[in-house]
Image 1: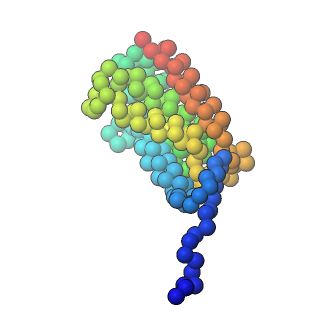
Image 2 (image 1 turned 90 degrees about the vertical axis):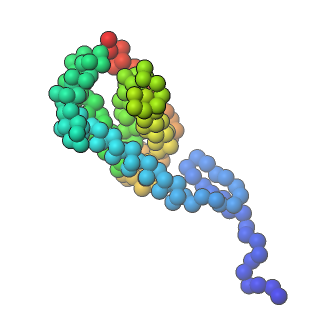
Image 3 (image 1 turned 90 degrees about the horizontal axis):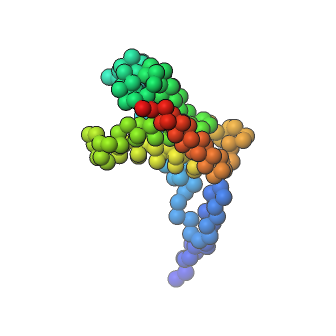
Length: 189
């Protein structure tokens, strides 16, 4: 006896910006955007918390004085200034990532800061407690967000220039973050 519902489904097309895949839709656009939101929130708020450790001494951090001493011991000139720069970059870049504001630049700020963190931890191997795997993971996550864009649930959706994220924006921003990190590393003894 025939049923009233169709026995086969017609092929659908899943459309993401710059990508159209014919065939059965396997991922909801909302799943993609929810995943980016989760990544942005966790990575961004983690970085903002690290920045507040440097700036204000919150969460057991050293504040500007303690962090400045660490930067000086790590070979950076003007340790207190570097502590302020790193703290502001992590706090503001992290908060911007969390809400999806100027996402390519926020991701680049985190990339630049974390490349310097990797340089400091590099000699300790890959794994914790002295390794650089944590810093590498944060760097890759920030670069991935800069390249993919923030998704639909972000403040960038209300900014005309960034509403339609382009790979070129993210790639240029990551390049700026890497060049800035390289310049800072050249100052290190």
